[in-house]
Image (cartoon, rainbow, N blue to C red):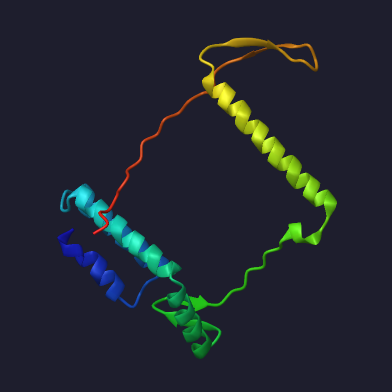
Length: 161
């Protein structure tokens, strides 16, 4: 990918806005579609960068360092068209409330999920149309195998060493 000149220029640039991100994407895509960069090489390189970014962003030490820096800089720390602020997330542990109605509903939900899974396995196993009688209503119902769709995706696996 021209030794990633576009990518290097982007991260070195002080303008990291959504618009400049979109421009970078267009540039990288054009390099692949115009044949200036090998498609597989470019895809693997970008996939590796994405995985490195994901690991970096999830690292607790990095998160702590950024939070400290934001606290020093003030409410919102700005860099290159981006603002970094600290936000709070609230989660509730409803099970700890001791509400028996809530706990009963959770049990029902789990039971229904299990029944759905079993029914899906049954439907997946049938190969042709079947006629069944609904035990509750007595109605005759025809069921067919579920519609099956297959999609393809690209998978990249990196060597461990």
